[in-house]
Every structure is written in structure tokens, then in C-alpha cells.
Length: 159
View (spheres, rainbow, N blue to C red):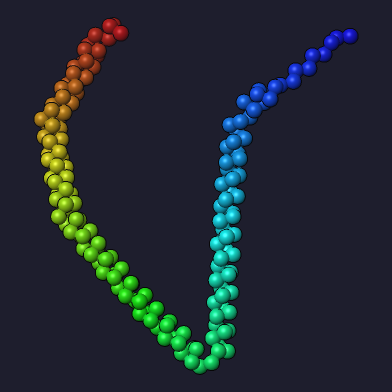
């Protein structure tokens, strides 16, 4: 009979091998659970607010006329305050838009003009180099290739 040796990994070995993937998986699971809990919290809060709104409408519909008039007046005051806040926000938005337009006209437009001038200068430079440097070299290469072919034709035994 052959003896069997059983190797039992220690606790340190098993945790060292599986720590990183398990931690990443646990972190992902925790994030998913946190996200799901947050969504359910928002849904529950929205349902509670909707229920309170319906309850308030029913109470005001059955309340005496004086109570409804007071609530109406308070609601009108809140709407006026809201329109003032929206007006101030709109004024701030218009000021920011004017600042952006000023930035575009006075800072970005000159940069674009300068860039366009640089591009046109670069275009002229490349055209000059093409006419005065590249074309003569290409013609020289053509003449040398023709001369080489001529020598190959005259002396066919040199291959």
C-alpha cells in the first residue's frame, strides 16, 4: 500500500489567494446594493409625497370656504416668491451668457484669426518648398533612372 499525503492549506494561504477577487466582488455587490437601496428610498419618498398631496387635496375639498381661501392666498404668495427667484436666476443666466459672448468675441476670435494666418503661411511655405526643392529632386531622380536604364540597355552583360 502506498501512503497518501493530504495537504491542507492553512488559513493564511487560502485568504492570500482569494482576497483580491473576493474583495473586488464584495465591493461591487456593496455598490449595487447601495444603488438599489437608494432607488427604493427615492421611490418610497415619491409615493409618500404623492399620498400627502392627494390627502391635502381631499382635506381642502372638504374644508370650509375660509380655510380654502387662506390656502389659496398662501399658494399665490409662494408662486410670487418662486417667480422672483426664477427672475433672479434668469438675470444671472443672461449675465453669464453675455460674459461668454464677450469671451468668444474678444479672446477666442483673435486666436482663431491668428491660427488661420499661421495655416495660410504654412501653406505658402510648403508650396514654395515643393516648387523649389522637391520638383527639382524628382526631375533629377527621373533623369538618373533614365540614364541607369540607358546603361543597362547598352551593356546587357552587367547583370
